[in-house]
Image 1 (cartoon, rainbow over the protein chains, first blue to last red):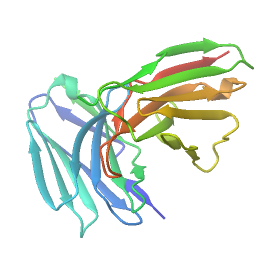
Image 2 (image 1 turned 90 degrees about the horizontal axis):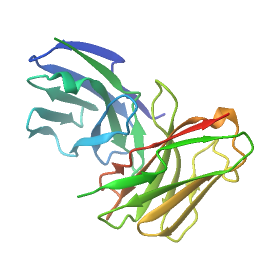
Image 3 (image 1 turned 30 degrees about the horizontal axis):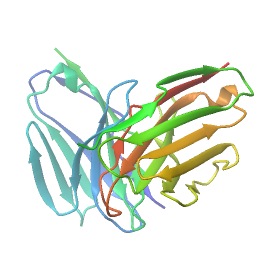
Image 4 (image 1 turned 45 degrees about the vertical axis):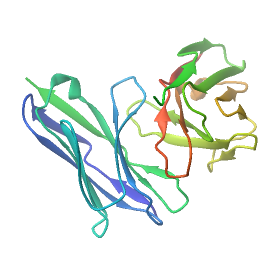
Length: 109
Length: 116
């Protein structure tokens, strides 16, 4: 079956760095997406990885290892506004997004 | 770029009535639009995928006669919840993508439906 695993909740301190991991098992693979979802709002796109390696975009970076079925989202210089749920989604061979349940990130001062 | 709007953002209706939600891609043509539902503290659940000018593809367990989807143009898709019941109360979110199948999905702001 298809499955996306990510931690349910993480806590980090303002100004610190946090890494949110995601492992995936999908029928085929056409890329890995990360979205941010603030409470009560719709998801917003953060990153897309289809090749192995690290993609850096400002304070956020995303890493992919296709051989390991593994990705992570790295958030640096955490700010209070980064408190949100982070959704990992893998695109399968039919170009369907398979969604993880999301990781709720709590930032403490 | 890649802005998707939804209307209305909030709906409160009586049980048995029908509710229509609009999803528009404002600055791009969306070849494919998606409708999701999200219950509190749960993950996104894909309800259906629609391509412009063709019938929507519904996910298993989603009643197509209850959730009517129309994708009449490259910038507009509508979801009609027919004969709504309290259990249909949820956060309905659409997304849209342009171009090829691996293009990024961009989400609308969502519509909160409360059925009394």
